[in-house]
Image 1 (cartoon, rainbow, N blue to C red):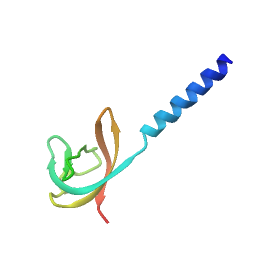
Image 2: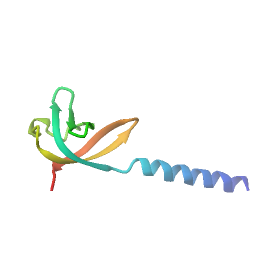
Image 3: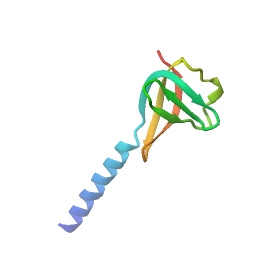
Image 4: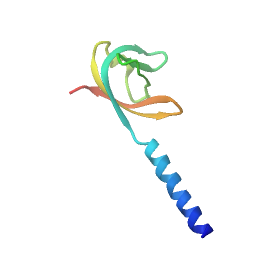
Length: 85
């Protein structure tokens, strides 16, 4: 019985941790780009940290985009930014 409880607890923990690691998407208009900080802020107020693979200089204020991101410890890190469809 004890082994069953441990296995069930481990399975629940793995399921919960994998759900938080799923990427999310946000769409909006770029309100500001801070190249020195490596962040982009949308008109929704959401601020995303940019990875090295995203060229901050290519992002323009007023551009409509969709940001794919992951949230870890309250910080949203973009994995991709593309023009909105």
